[in-house]
Image (cartoon, rainbow, N blue to C red):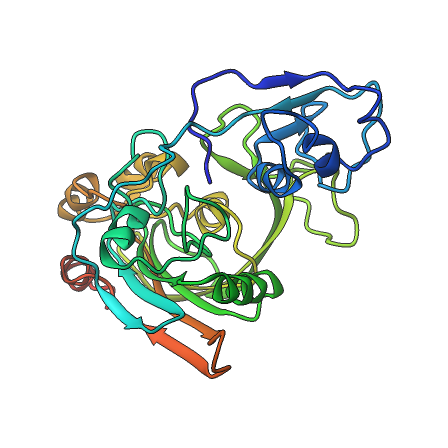
Length: 336
């Protein structure tokens, strides 16, 4: 969950009881947090800083540590159903697979308390896993608001545990497509780095840099904070200053594809947060430049998802093309 709260971070004094404990266990002692699961979630979603750095849950606290927690923006305790017709690709007693449209937030957050995919799911079915609590029933993984494509939702806790484990173990199959502003220099490769919150812009993520100002890429020597991220890519076409890219995720970090492509000089078209606007003038056609300026979303699409069914153990595979309006643009730009 991204933290959009405007409130200041909570500065937590290190008590005698917390000294020598793992960070997640120590945070569970804080009344505002209360449980180790909640603490682990805050650490995982980059809401916790120790000495101004993002820590691991296993970090052992010292009395001299400075501990800050950015509490997530409040969301309603009782979610309301949202009357939105969902594009359901598959549904049974355990899971729902949905083709999410761009513009739909996955779960409630500041500014989107009752108009999310979670709210639409509540209108669609009463059977949703409560594994992660009332704020995000059924949600196993997420897509950014402006990303379209396939997402799977759990309808019971057993399915939730199974799917969560598969994403964690990286046994799922995930393929994305993106239109990037810029001409790719290489046709295929792998981008690796450790991702963390941007040092000056909390809405963004960035790769952690070494002393040479290049991303750290040695998994055997990780930094004190940040999460390992791996993105494989194939450039399908380069045309007029645009690149059409197929991406396979090895890990699934927040903003991973957006950061990796942007830092490679290929921001996703329409992605204002990661610098696409600055490169529009490098596109050959003035008409294409205007199309890019008028985009209402960024052009990233979750096209393929594969996983093992939690109950039957059958391997499942889903594929979904871009929305028709984006397909029309890709044809117009001679990318497909």
